[in-house]
Length: 283
Image (cartoon, rainbow, N blue to C red; front, side, top):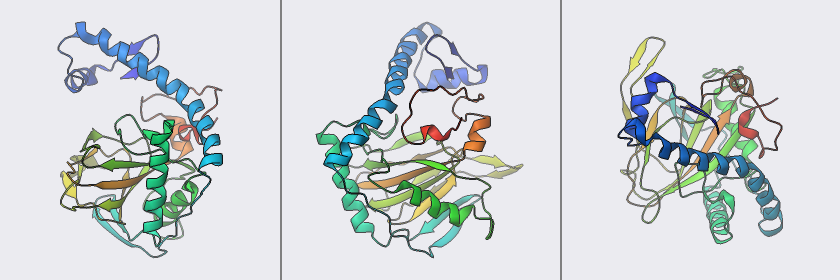
């Protein structure tokens, strides 16, 4: 579905899937959905300015930037085609967890717009660069997977990112439905998981270069990342106990400048102010 505030165009091949996903019984119910989309459109349109203003307030009330201390030689295992398990990631994992938990509590208690990381997750926080050095996260994974001086696993430039936490467990999110990421490459780092039998990552069947790959499940192991292309459709199984993940959506402005993966069209960029890396697009 490609949404605009005044018109909504729907690709025919996606129509019945959309009806099923949104539980629309008939076309007559679409106006209700359009109203909901209008509300979400307005929220997102003002979100960048709200985030930028809130980022300025953090410098006064939460001026505590932390840099990750990376394990320079993590183990890398290809667990399915173009899906990798990497780790251990952080040498200072307890400090990272404590820092992010403190920031999450700060956002909730002060009603800051960082307190909901995306439209699918209700619990977690979006991380601005003055709270966590997100450039270093991207550089770490870029060196592991896109550096042409070593085995070049992915051909992405990776010049920006969107980084956030997601939190699961009692009183929080329990699972995450099927989706793909707004990224070229995603690193899903498990920071905490009280039960490694819970919250498994599920990847749908897929076809790459004519080769078929079956659906698969992977455990979420503390201080290990699962790295995959953002276009892979995946979900997170139910978590009964506490689990927190750090999600790094890494982006390539050259790739997304040709085609927006969310709407399937050539980007038409506005001049309005955008928060930090503006969705990975560059004019």
